[in-house]
Image (cartoon, rainbow, N blue to C red):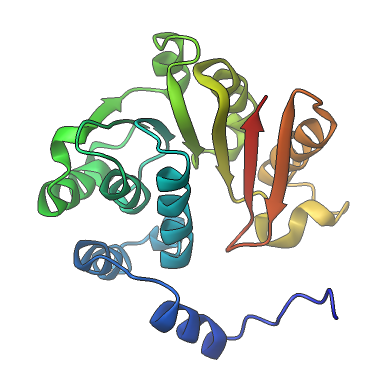
Length: 216
């Protein structure tokens, strides 16, 4: 038995997306539309969206918080996995990007499950009740990750999940010579989570790194 991680060539990724992901038609169209935008690399991969949707179903999440919505792929994927009476609070500061998300939510029939807050996420976090969410997803400016994580620890219930995107930073977190502000911020948060005995956590080499944190 080998503990080697498979080399994810384009051919392997294409295979995964053909047989391992049941991508909703709205999500497929949204991915194609977003690919034409200058910041398209900010969109999560379809296999990550499918994984997150499955986590929503596994923990039966009804209240979700998203910090960083962009064009709405992750929020749409999670909203589709929620029950009809579920709610997802989406935090972003871009009306232009979230206008695309609004169309996706409407096309997917989940617009009534989404509460979009166009304001700095730290301001929105301050208005939310302790332990009021089952799951939170952080995928915004990396220098704000520590503050977002602190806020999510408060608002996510015991037994709930915090998902944090881009925790590998293209591998720069493992390179001590990589000293840009994003790598420093994420490296610091990774170390904080690794040492925190109040949570259970794993960093998965999925896409650009996805950390799962279970609040004890």
